[in-house]
Image (cartoon, rainbow, N blue to C red; front, top):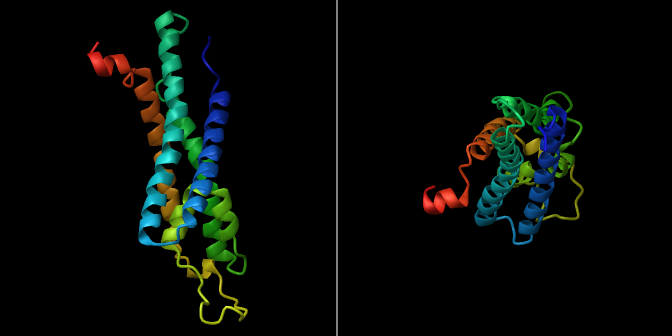
Length: 194
Protein backbone atom coordinates (compact mmCIF):
# COMPACT_ATOMS: atom_id res chain seq x y z
CA UNK A 1 0.00 0.00 0.00
CA UNK A 2 1.40 3.38 -1.02
CA UNK A 3 0.20 6.93 -1.39
CA UNK A 4 -1.94 7.49 -4.48
CA UNK A 5 -0.77 10.05 -6.99
CA UNK A 6 -2.37 13.46 -7.34
CA UNK A 7 -3.60 12.64 -10.86
CA UNK A 8 -5.22 9.38 -9.76
CA UNK A 9 -7.00 11.11 -6.87
CA UNK A 10 -8.13 13.91 -9.17
CA UNK A 11 -9.55 11.40 -11.66
CA UNK A 12 -11.33 9.60 -8.82
CA UNK A 13 -12.79 12.91 -7.66
CA UNK A 14 -13.99 13.77 -11.17
CA UNK A 15 -15.51 10.29 -11.44
CA UNK A 16 -17.42 10.89 -8.23
CA UNK A 17 -18.66 14.24 -9.60
CA UNK A 18 -19.98 12.45 -12.70
CA UNK A 19 -21.52 9.68 -10.58
CA UNK A 20 -23.19 12.24 -8.32
CA UNK A 21 -24.65 14.06 -11.33
CA UNK A 22 -25.99 10.82 -12.81
CA UNK A 23 -27.54 9.71 -9.52
CA UNK A 24 -29.13 13.13 -8.95
CA UNK A 25 -30.52 13.09 -12.50
CA UNK A 26 -32.19 9.71 -11.99
CA UNK A 27 -33.48 10.69 -8.55
CA UNK A 28 -34.99 13.92 -9.89
CA UNK A 29 -36.56 12.17 -12.86
CA UNK A 30 -38.01 9.55 -10.52
CA UNK A 31 -39.48 12.20 -8.22
CA UNK A 32 -40.82 14.07 -11.25
CA UNK A 33 -43.40 11.32 -11.69
CA UNK A 34 -45.16 12.58 -8.56
CA UNK A 35 -45.70 16.01 -10.04
CA UNK A 36 -43.97 19.31 -9.63
CA UNK A 37 -45.28 20.69 -6.38
CA UNK A 38 -43.54 22.28 -3.42
CA UNK A 39 -43.02 18.98 -1.59
CA UNK A 40 -41.28 17.25 -4.51
CA UNK A 41 -39.15 20.32 -5.15
CA UNK A 42 -37.95 20.45 -1.53
CA UNK A 43 -37.34 16.69 -1.39
CA UNK A 44 -35.48 16.63 -4.71
CA UNK A 45 -33.25 19.60 -3.78
CA UNK A 46 -32.40 18.24 -0.33
CA UNK A 47 -31.87 14.65 -1.46
CA UNK A 48 -29.94 15.71 -4.56
CA UNK A 49 -27.61 17.93 -2.55
CA UNK A 50 -27.14 15.21 0.04
CA UNK A 51 -26.33 12.57 -2.61
CA UNK A 52 -23.93 14.82 -4.49
CA UNK A 53 -21.97 16.18 -1.54
CA UNK A 54 -21.81 12.87 0.34
CA UNK A 55 -20.20 11.30 -2.72
CA UNK A 56 -17.73 14.20 -2.87
CA UNK A 57 -17.08 13.76 0.86
CA UNK A 58 -16.57 10.00 0.46
CA UNK A 59 -13.73 10.14 -2.04
CA UNK A 60 -11.67 12.43 0.23
CA UNK A 61 -12.62 10.50 3.37
CA UNK A 62 -11.32 7.26 1.87
CA UNK A 63 -8.02 8.93 1.02
CA UNK A 64 -7.80 10.36 4.54
CA UNK A 65 -8.19 6.91 6.10
CA UNK A 66 -5.60 5.52 3.69
CA UNK A 67 -3.19 8.34 4.53
CA UNK A 68 -3.67 7.73 8.27
CA UNK A 69 -2.87 4.03 7.78
CA UNK A 70 0.25 4.82 5.75
CA UNK A 71 1.61 7.15 8.42
CA UNK A 72 0.65 4.80 11.24
CA UNK A 73 2.49 1.92 9.54
CA UNK A 74 5.54 4.10 8.85
CA UNK A 75 5.37 3.95 5.05
CA UNK A 76 5.00 7.72 4.80
CA UNK A 77 6.53 10.31 7.07
CA UNK A 78 4.15 13.26 6.83
CA UNK A 79 0.66 13.93 5.57
CA UNK A 80 -0.14 16.11 2.58
CA UNK A 81 -2.44 18.59 4.28
CA UNK A 82 -3.86 20.85 1.59
CA UNK A 83 -3.95 18.41 -1.31
CA UNK A 84 -7.74 17.98 -1.21
CA UNK A 85 -8.40 21.70 -1.40
CA UNK A 86 -6.58 21.80 -4.75
CA UNK A 87 -8.31 18.62 -5.96
CA UNK A 88 -11.62 20.11 -4.79
CA UNK A 89 -10.93 23.26 -6.83
CA UNK A 90 -10.28 21.13 -9.92
CA UNK A 91 -13.52 19.25 -9.23
CA UNK A 92 -15.29 22.62 -8.82
CA UNK A 93 -14.06 23.84 -12.21
CA UNK A 94 -15.21 20.57 -13.81
CA UNK A 95 -18.64 20.72 -12.14
CA UNK A 96 -19.19 24.46 -12.71
CA UNK A 97 -18.15 24.46 -16.38
CA UNK A 98 -21.69 23.64 -17.65
CA UNK A 99 -23.07 26.49 -15.51
CA UNK A 100 -20.54 28.89 -17.03
CA UNK A 101 -21.54 27.72 -20.52
CA UNK A 102 -25.21 28.22 -19.59
CA UNK A 103 -24.46 31.76 -18.40
CA UNK A 104 -22.62 32.54 -21.64
CA UNK A 105 -25.57 31.05 -23.54
CA UNK A 106 -28.01 33.34 -21.74
CA UNK A 107 -25.82 36.46 -22.12
CA UNK A 108 -24.36 36.17 -25.61
CA UNK A 109 -26.20 33.45 -27.55
CA UNK A 110 -29.88 33.78 -26.59
CA UNK A 111 -31.02 32.05 -29.78
CA UNK A 112 -29.50 28.78 -28.56
CA UNK A 113 -31.26 26.79 -25.84
CA UNK A 114 -28.71 24.83 -23.82
CA UNK A 115 -30.94 24.40 -20.77
CA UNK A 116 -32.12 20.92 -21.77
CA UNK A 117 -28.58 19.52 -22.25
CA UNK A 118 -27.57 21.37 -19.07
CA UNK A 119 -30.17 19.45 -17.07
CA UNK A 120 -28.84 16.17 -18.41
CA UNK A 121 -25.14 16.99 -17.92
CA UNK A 122 -25.49 18.67 -14.51
CA UNK A 123 -27.84 16.27 -12.80
CA UNK A 124 -27.19 17.84 -9.41
CA UNK A 125 -28.52 21.14 -10.79
CA UNK A 126 -31.67 19.54 -12.23
CA UNK A 127 -33.70 19.88 -8.98
CA UNK A 128 -32.81 23.57 -8.88
CA UNK A 129 -33.87 23.99 -12.52
CA UNK A 130 -37.14 22.28 -11.69
CA UNK A 131 -37.69 24.53 -8.66
CA UNK A 132 -36.49 27.96 -9.76
CA UNK A 133 -37.05 28.23 -13.51
CA UNK A 134 -40.72 28.40 -14.42
CA UNK A 135 -41.70 26.01 -17.20
CA UNK A 136 -43.25 27.23 -20.43
CA UNK A 137 -46.96 26.56 -20.21
CA UNK A 138 -49.44 26.37 -23.03
CA UNK A 139 -52.14 24.45 -21.20
CA UNK A 140 -55.10 26.15 -22.82
CA UNK A 141 -53.82 25.76 -26.37
CA UNK A 142 -51.50 22.76 -26.39
CA UNK A 143 -51.85 22.33 -30.17
CA UNK A 144 -50.45 25.78 -30.92
CA UNK A 145 -46.77 25.92 -31.77
CA UNK A 146 -44.89 28.35 -29.59
CA UNK A 147 -41.45 29.86 -29.80
CA UNK A 148 -41.23 30.23 -26.01
CA UNK A 149 -38.45 28.30 -24.36
CA UNK A 150 -37.64 27.63 -20.72
CA UNK A 151 -34.31 29.43 -21.01
CA UNK A 152 -36.23 32.62 -21.83
CA UNK A 153 -37.77 32.43 -18.32
CA UNK A 154 -34.38 31.80 -16.67
CA UNK A 155 -32.79 34.60 -14.70
CA UNK A 156 -29.12 35.34 -15.34
CA UNK A 157 -28.51 34.87 -11.64
CA UNK A 158 -29.37 31.15 -11.78
CA UNK A 159 -26.08 29.93 -13.35
CA UNK A 160 -24.13 32.16 -10.97
CA UNK A 161 -25.96 30.66 -7.99
CA UNK A 162 -25.20 27.17 -9.29
CA UNK A 163 -21.50 28.06 -9.47
CA UNK A 164 -21.69 29.24 -5.85
CA UNK A 165 -23.40 25.93 -5.00
CA UNK A 166 -20.50 24.06 -6.59
CA UNK A 167 -18.03 26.14 -4.55
CA UNK A 168 -18.94 23.87 -1.64
CA UNK A 169 -17.01 21.03 -3.34
CA UNK A 170 -13.56 22.05 -1.99
CA UNK A 171 -15.09 22.45 1.48
CA UNK A 172 -16.62 18.96 1.31
CA UNK A 173 -13.39 17.39 0.08
CA UNK A 174 -11.19 18.99 2.73
CA UNK A 175 -13.73 18.16 5.44
CA UNK A 176 -13.90 14.54 4.22
CA UNK A 177 -10.11 14.25 4.27
CA UNK A 178 -9.97 15.76 7.77
CA UNK A 179 -12.60 13.34 9.10
CA UNK A 180 -10.88 10.36 7.47
CA UNK A 181 -7.36 11.28 8.52
CA UNK A 182 -8.30 12.03 12.13
CA UNK A 183 -10.49 8.90 12.34
CA UNK A 184 -13.59 10.80 13.44
CA UNK A 185 -16.01 8.18 12.08
CA UNK A 186 -14.47 5.20 13.86
CA UNK A 187 -17.45 3.38 15.33
CA UNK A 188 -15.40 2.05 18.26
CA UNK A 189 -14.29 5.57 19.21
CA UNK A 190 -17.85 6.84 18.89
CA UNK A 191 -19.41 3.95 20.86
CA UNK A 192 -16.81 3.27 23.53
CA UNK A 193 -14.86 6.54 23.66
CA UNK A 194 -11.46 4.91 22.96
